[in-house]
Length: 82
Image (cartoon, rainbow, N blue to C red):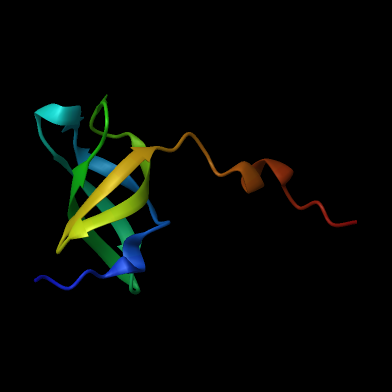
C-alpha cells in the first residue's frame, strides 16, 4: 500500500496541463515544502491549462483531486483591521 502524504491538501496551484474530467488527468504545480512541485491532477469536470485550482484530496503518491478556485475570499478584505 502506498503512503499518502496529505501535505498538499488545501494548497492552491495552477494547471500546467488541463484536466479532462472523467476522461483523464492533467497536471498541477503547487507551492509546497518551500518550493514548487507538480502532481497528477484529477477533477470532476474538464478544466483548461492555466486554471487556478484547490487541492481537495490526495489519490496516492503524486496524484491529487482538484477543483477550480476562483480566488482567495480573504484577499478581498484587503488590510482591514482598524
